[in-house]
Amino acid sequence: MKKHPAKHEKMEGAKERKKEYGSAKGKHPGFKAVQAKIAAKQGVGMERAGAILAAGARKASAKAVKANPRLKKVSGMKKKMGAK
View: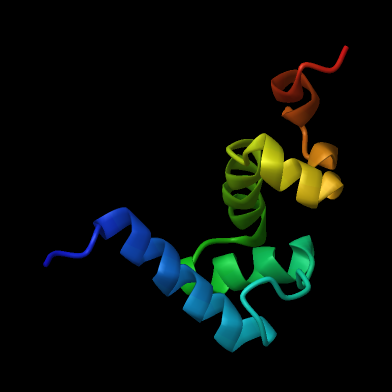
């Protein structure tokens, strides 16, 4: 029986987060820390890493924003969420 690829990727992502933060739904390390991690991992500058992180935040679902309201602080999120 074949594994569903998208489901498998989600499981791998949860396992990776568990290693980093102690649990799959562990406390977020903060945007600056994630930005630094992206910069180091992808070999780009901090400004570009911030843009990558912001793009990911803009793609966040309504459920994700409800779980982490600080995502609304990212430029362009208010427009996406329908706020005036």
